[in-house]
Amino acid sequence: METSARYVLKGALSYASRDGEMAEAQFLEMNAPTGKHARQVASLRQAIVRAIVEDGRTNPAPEPAESPVPAPEPSGDEGTGAPEIAEGIDIINILARSSVDLGDVYKVARDLFVLKGVIRVDGEVPMTTVLLDAMSAQDFETLVGSYIANFTLPS
Image (cartoon, rainbow, N blue to C red; front, side):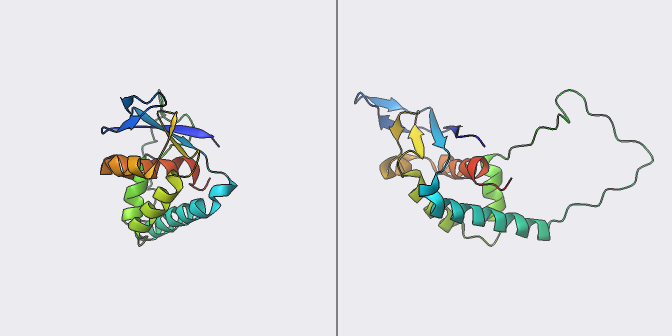
């Protein structure tokens, strides 16, 4: 498992850099949770697992159809065997289609993101409640989904 990942901001987010100057954030560095974050991570993991199970029940995978024509061979980047990583918004959409309370997920994520070392703005300044409040709703939602995809999805 990776120990960190970057979320590139789509909206504007101003912050006071270490030298005290105002700067526009470009990315958020997400760091893997530790045992200190176990309660919050357990809540996020339980939410996504519940949503995936519900999604599988309501949208079962289609049965493969028999075809007299053989399937084409993968070419180029297709079929490399590399696992496909879900995008942050994909995770949020799975959660939103389920019975999981998305508001509860967002609250747990907010609590987690302001803990020391979890999220750093441009890799240097710790995330704060004030900065979370200043983020666009789209960036916040996608950040939550990206964090879940990178650090809490079951393997």
